[in-house]
Amino acid sequence: MLSFSVRSALTKYRGLWLPSQALVRAMSSSKGPTSPYATLSISRPTESITHVELHRPEKRNAMNKAFWSEMVDCFNEIAVDPDCRVVVFSAAGKIFTAGLDLMDMAGDILQPEGDDTARVSWNLRRTVAKYQESFSVIEKCPKPVVVAVHGACVGGGVDLITACDIRLCTQDAWFQVKEVDVGLAADVGTLQRLPKVIGSRSLVNELALTARKMYADEAKSSGLVSRVFANKEDMMAGALEMAGEIAGRSPVAVQGTKVNLIYARDHSVEEGLNYMATWNMSMLQTHDVMKSVQAAMEKKSHKEVIFSKL
Image (cartoon, rainbow, N blue to C red; front, side):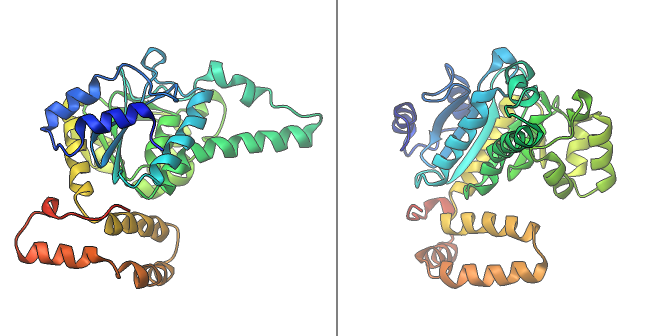
């Protein structure tokens, strides 16, 4: 169930498609994390859009212990929330994230428990797998996730955004696979997802092995992001407009599309086609197809069509 504060936001904005700038101002007025979370602020700028904001601006949105578990709880809740059709993820403060909070996380990483090498290794592997799930849960969530990046996106930030479906950034944004600079290989998603996002193995290797910064223009040309905006306010307005376009479509179609895109990424064309045929043998039996076709014939906007919740 949604927390009380999120329900309050939902009541405030229910049914209203406010102008983008008004929505941006409403989203930017967050007073801090939303209970029960200590690192995330959750709001509903419209009935069908959930805004998740990483909210540790005083710590440059560094990812502490609480963040990793809260991401799992948050996106598991969103995954089964029938009111939510799309997610916008952003961050408070001057930058998107400085990456791992090394001071807070040092104990888990550098001093794992265990009586011998086998037990220490077993516990450390379990810890790494737990952190991996914090971003895999974004990918597993059937609701599309639009991430909006401003300023620095370092280390774990790259792991996070590569698990999202659509990536936007500001002109002053920059990205850095930082892990080799702190003596480790990135282990929560970047090395697995970035090659499939960018497509150039050479560029991925360069970024991961040198820890150099990639700026907005290169991020756009390489395919890491699909759009670049002049500033954060314009980017958030663009993210909300895009989210509104997605939310206005059939949730059966939208969520089925996300699931099958991810499946196709990790399987052969033949396997993907077979999975799609199996998927649609049931999903085609929805009223949404007839509603969408009828709206198109009557030259109505998709936003005028009322689709049942999913």
